[in-house]
Amino acid sequence: MGKISPVSSKYIVHAQIQTEGIIDRPDVIGAIFGQTEGLLGADLELRELQRSGRIGRIDVKLDTKSGKTEGSIVIPSSLDKTETAIIGAALETIQRIGPCNANVKIEKIEDVRISKRNFVISRAKELLKTFTDSVLPDSQEITDEVFQAVRMMGVSEYGKDRLPSGPNIDDAEELIVVEGRADVLNLLKNGIKNVIALNGTSVPQTIIDLSKKKVLTIFVDGDRGGDLIIKELLNVAEIDYVIKAPDGKEVEELTKKEIHKALRGKIAIEQVKFDLEGKTLERTLPLKQNNTRIMQSGRIMKTALTLQQKSNFKKMLDDLIGTRGAYFIDAEMNILGKVPGSELIQSLKGLNSVYAIVFDGSINEDIAQTAEINDVRYIVGINSKITSDTKAEILTTKDLT
Image 1 (cartoon, one colour):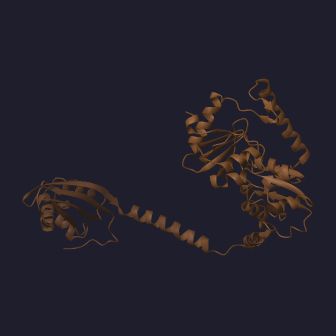
Image 2: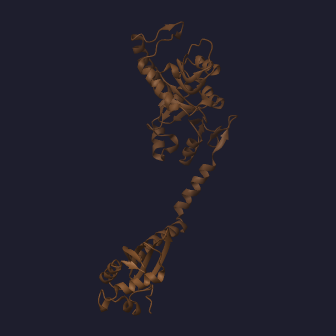
Image 3: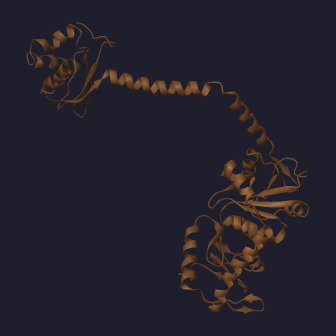
């Protein structure tokens, strides 16, 4: 009995078989040859086709469970597609195998050439990727890679606060102050070396000292956190210029073009102060006109929460549940920033623009005292350990229901 060469096989017939009893492989082979004999005529007699090598070795796999047998039949073919389809259809006429009723169903007829072609395409992609990755870069790529690596290596630490910075901070007449190490790396990568980071939400003494002898430009992210840092720096350091990244963007993700465009558009500190004073006046006048705030001995008296304030505080507190974080809120009920609860007190020190704090935790004396010093109006938390009167109004979950 001849075999079809794997090289010459063009199609493969895949069939599924089910019987209501236990059968063996010889039973299936016998049924295939016996029940299709004479069905398709002499030209498509399976025994003759297999002898001539146009039908290959029939592969049968069976699995018996709970007194029933299931399995698969695979038949390779070098016939044309029409003849192969006829052979497949003939298999479905088998109704009995051995002593058992049977059901044979053609699952698919696979075109071997398409399978090989798909393999070739997939493998070619892998080979091309390997070749591309291993090919030698051109001179410009080598230059750029080395140049960038040298810039990145230029990150150092400056001062007693060990702030991330570019090289030769002492020699530079003008410094650019950014928020964190990632911002320093991005500026160095794009050729700007006179840069130093705050490395936190509070202003380090190193920055305060540098502001007295250097021209300082603060370059912050384009969000409310950036605004908060600008206001804090204005209170403790001598800043000369201010730059903000485009709205919604961080300094660390800016492109070279965006960085240089931002640097060209830096704003003098006098203009920044004027703008901030104008915004403060706009917020204060309506509040006085509506009598929602009453000044007494330089301190704001406690007044009843509006329904909107109560709703906003409750939503913010619900958002924080499980995070152990805290929101800083301005007088317009906008979130200025979010800090971990463990850094709440340190982050709040020196800030005078925080109207309220919403905290996923228990309000204690340290938080209340720091809030008083910084003129915070409301402290909202899960519960409170405060037993004495405070200037800041304490609100807990039960006060917001």
